[in-house]
Amino acid sequence: MVPKFRAYIRDADDLDYNDIPHKGHFVYGSLIKGKLNDDVDAIVGDLIEVTDEYVNPEWWCSIEKGSAEQFTGLKDANGKEIYEDDVLENPKYRSVVKFESGSFYADVIGAANRFTLAGEWQTSVVIGNVHENPELLEAQHD
Image (cartoon, rainbow, N blue to C red; front, side, top):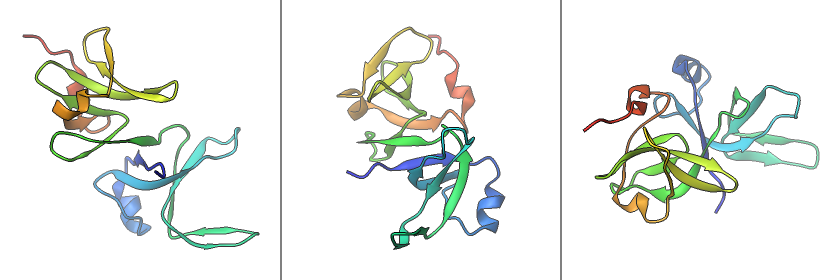
C-alpha cells in the first residue's frame, strides 16, 4: 500500500486560486518532506513526468512541517477513511487517532487510556477532526 496523506489548509481560497484539488480545507496526496532545516513539507498529486534530473507533479501544496496526517488504512463503521487527528466515537468513548512508534492508536478523550485501532475501528464512526471540530476534544460527562 502506498501511504496516503492529507493536510489541513486554513485558507481554502488559496487552494481554489491555485487549482489544487481539495475537500473542504483538506488537501490529499503523497507527502514530500522538506530538508531538515526547512519549515515546510509538501503534499503532491500524481507525477506527470520523472527523469534523472527532475520530478514534475500534477500539482503541489506547501504545508507546515510535520502537519501531514497519514491514512490509517482503515475505514470506520460507515466506510469513511480514518486519518490521524480524526475524532472517533463508539458506544463506549470518544477518541482521537494518533500515530506513535510505528503504529496508530485511539487516544481516549478525558481519560488516560489508549487503544490500538485493531477491532475498535469496526464499531467507531469518524465524527470530525481536531482542526474543524475542536469542541469534540472536550471530555464527555455522563
